[in-house]
Length: 197
Ligand code: G3P
Image (cartoon, rainbow, N blue to C red; front, top):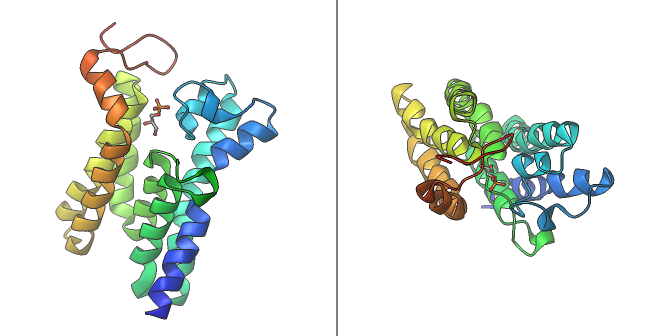
């Protein structure tokens, strides 16, 4: 049990690095948790008007998930999914921020790409496609998250179907305020305006 526990803790430590908060602070744009939606993800960094910081947050939040899985897989391939769980939970519930973390879309992309590159590709297409079409970040993230278990099933990677579904359900849980706004037609679009308004 020592190896899976180590993979979990290692994944958690990587996943819990709140890049959005760190980069926004370093960039002199204030405390991200007091800006916009208060979320620590790239979408909210974008609301500071700092596109470069938002892009870097997206990249690093994805990279930490990918790296956690890939590094653990080097040393113990069987524990790679455990590292994925650790990294994802680390991002959602970081001890450093009183367990108030992000919504998981970027980190999940990294994790899915590392475990199942084909599903990761589907995830990226679902995410970017929905974003380009509707320009609503939360909706795009949710579409991407739920595309992962479907893709894993289509590609016969049944080991990952349940895991990816559990991740997607957690992403949905974290987006519950966004879902309320989507229903009410008040969820902001990227670049201004609201869905349906
Ligand atoms: O991944 C987060 C995004 O889907 C929504 O972020 O700040 O609009 O709640 P936000």
